[in-house]
Length: 108
Image 1 (cartoon, helix red, strand yellow):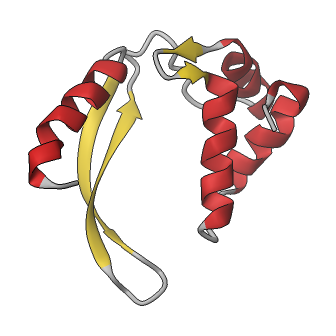
Image 2 (cartoon, one colour):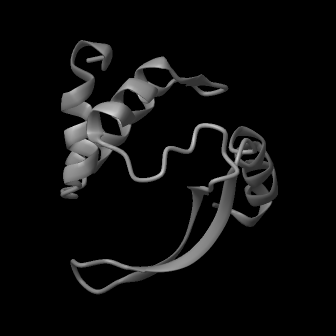
């Protein structure tokens, strides 16, 4: 993000993720080429009313099917995440397993 955009984008994300997510900043190291970058992600905490903790894939998929937030339906969010990961060559078996478990609920 450009410095001029950072505050506005973070305010929007903080608002969207306000329901029990903690903002975490970390340093990433990429497998290919060893490049590094600063990163930010939102971590679901037990304070989140939708927090399942460790749960079977089907239970997580059922929750995703029923969830909708300010950014839209959760199945669409997961599908777009899976698409992005594939496009960038990332192997995330848990995300892909959830996508399969969503079946017809996942938009194509």
